Image (cartoon, rainbow, N blue to C red; front, side, top):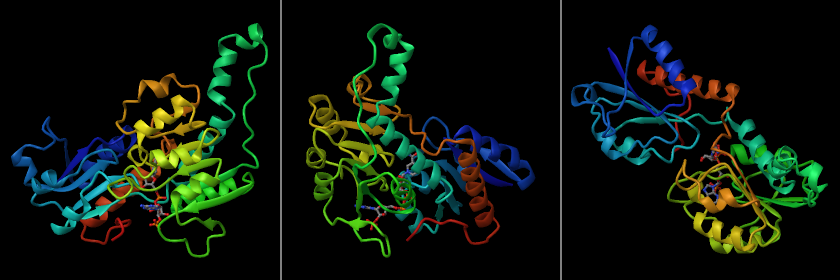
Length: 314
Ligand code: NDP
């Protein structure tokens, strides 16, 4: 049989894999409490299907001597040790592009929702405050503001296209300017933060971007600035973010991702300056179906000795 290890997949992807496995001649396994399958199973595993949050480290890869592919159900593959997989000749794939529009939509929702204080306004009506206290305090206009993007890849460009009709100005920071992009490149992140009203973070996670949005960047964004993070929690110095928000040195934040999910600092939960969502930027029926299909297509291709559909870049 063809043995597959499924790790932490979201319900829809797990169901698709489970339903299709018999027709493909695949036998599914789950890791034990130590994160590994039993030794008899481990030596037969040829494919791993992993959620974006599942850790696929050197220990797991080395426990699977017959492994050919790690198919990650996410565009971000920061939880997989790609260098180690490569050194073992294991292919790593991910699910780019199919989630661009939904993630960009959520970035925009968080930006507008933070500026217009949408959750607070909703709560105001539900609590009966409108009737008892009259109109709530004013919010802030989103149109005409200066927007900045940290990251201008597949998703960053989809966010930029949405901001075009709204933004007074739009600039971005990446390590390399994007060829032919109509938006202004700012070579230094602190400079970008200092000149914009809203900074939207959409870079990959991992060692290269950990803490990139530092206390200094948040300070540059300032008391009327808004931070939106739809990338990975670790890209932002979360302690610095909590301190800046609660002291009023940062105006507001819209956050889909956190440093230690699913744990969210109480100070953020208590703050009316932020809008919080539980890492759901790609979590729609349509996009989760497309991601699961792509995860399956990569597994099927590599296990049939065909090239992967969407390998991670070199
Ligand atoms: P891409 O690889 O297409 O784009 C990444 C962008 O980040 C590029 O513009 C790149 O430019 C920039 N970048 C990378 N490293 C740095 C750095 N050190 N400093 C500044 N800029 C940097 O990725 P996608 O747009 O497809 O996805 C981005 C990330 O979004 C994913 O990796 C994932 O972590 C996150 N994501 C979160 C989701 C959620 O549910 N909240 C859903 C989907 C994705 P350059 O290389 O020139 O620096």
